[in-house]
Length: 299
Image 1 (tube, one colour):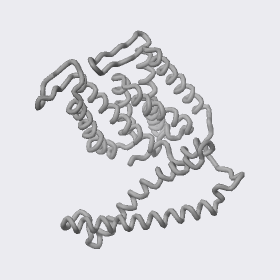
Image 2 (spheres, one colour):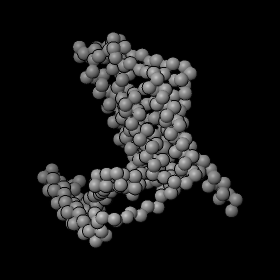
Image 3 (cartoon, rainbow, N blue to C red):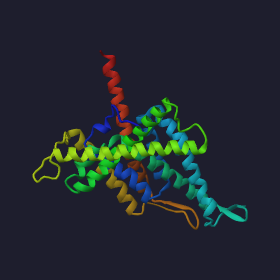
Image 4 (cartoon, rainbow, N blue to C red):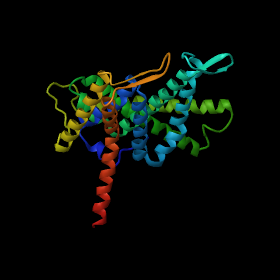
């Protein structure tokens, strides 16, 4: 959907990329602190729009925001826990706690979706195999192939649909049964193409010696001084953020009554570290763009 293009963070070592995305995706899910969720969502939205430009903005407006709205409304409509009743809807109490939880759950869902979209643009399949190929070679290969084939299948479906549209068999026109028949024919073609592509992939892997003992793998990744600095910086910030969390400096209770506990100054340290982690890739891209424009202006 989006491409990293000339992206400074995508050019970093895969270990740095994976450390960052592991934190920004997992921490908001397991620790639903309101400040963490808001900062994570805002940072993900900024970085996602930076990577995808207009296409990313359309995706956010047409898919992510409506999904978040549905998630925010779903919880108070079906979950009536909480001590503060706002009003009754068809004899069902709508509580403040359920509304607050729904809002922050929507922020969590939207942030995770956007971070996964950024992950898909930055973490390519060869990076995944580089990191996990020696640890779990079979699983890493299967996951990498699945991540690679899904966008290829989508692109192939679009090409088949465009070709059929050119000869007058548009899947979006005609009656219901006509559209179903046209869609079934597209499905038949894509399944045949996928099976043929799988055979070709297997033959190619066999010809290149996959699975033979002593077979080496080429990688073009080097852990240079920039990667060391970023890795140490991320590790220090993540360690400080998690230490504040496990020390109880920040905590939240959504039910029965919504309450937040922030032990200063450690809560401030946790928020600053979390914000620095989430915003660092976007800040690096802005710095790289500024340096690029400066170098261009001097030519």
